[in-house]
Length: 223
Image (tube, rainbow, N blue to C red; front, side, top):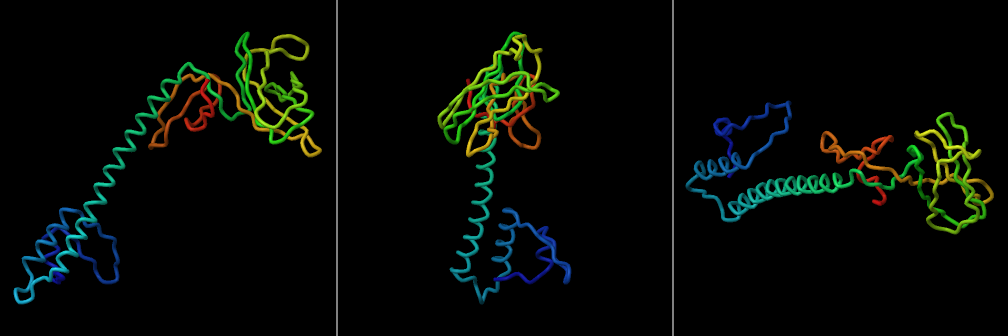
């Protein structure tokens, strides 16, 4: 049975909508119970609510309650997932990972390692190392390579055999494919310095030593 008395809604704490002013209302679980109880109290004794109507009301209540329970369960699951991810990311501190990048940090007396994917075989493959000015200081000739993963290591030496200064360098992998030189995406090995939880629930950030911060899900391999 529908409730037509506006005062009944006001007593329940529900607001009414004036004509010509549509508004979006939210009906909570407690208000829903009050409304259903009020309907039963004010129904016409000569026209009691039919069983089908009553079951319909209960079905609506079950739906509202079920959605709220599902939302709570999902929030608990999301919190648990974030905590698990945070613990996993924290264990990476001090370890090396592979991630998509063209930037590599050369430590004093160290080397730079990485890999890239060959979409097809090529007779001419090379990796160029560029300094902060964009000048090529070393060209690694990898010769002929088949389709698949290709690994490379730069020993930190320039073309003249002297050690390059420690710092950040650009790595460019190229292969002669379909009649032209094609630049390929590289994955660089870097050390994880720290991890931070992003604000607003936007996941975890991994801070690479001397390089930019990346998202946790951008890590391709843990070494």
